[in-house]
Image (tube, rainbow, N blue to C red; front, top):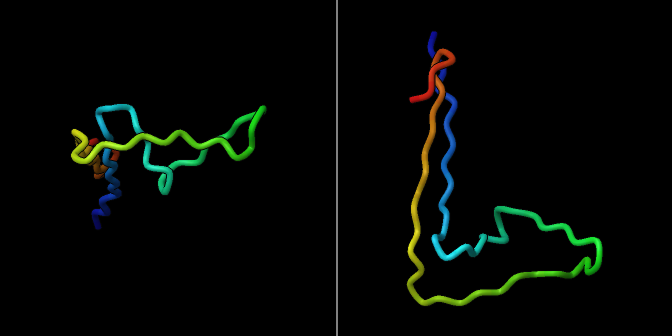
Length: 56
């Protein structure tokens, strides 16, 4: 049988990272958060799948 493993991620082109999907670490400030605000940021959605050791 064939099994497809897949995942997707949305990246904002202005460099902002979605804090709900990523974790930050700072040696100097454990409460560090980078805030940016854009009403309509440009984004790109990336999807990848693997089927029988082949990227699709």
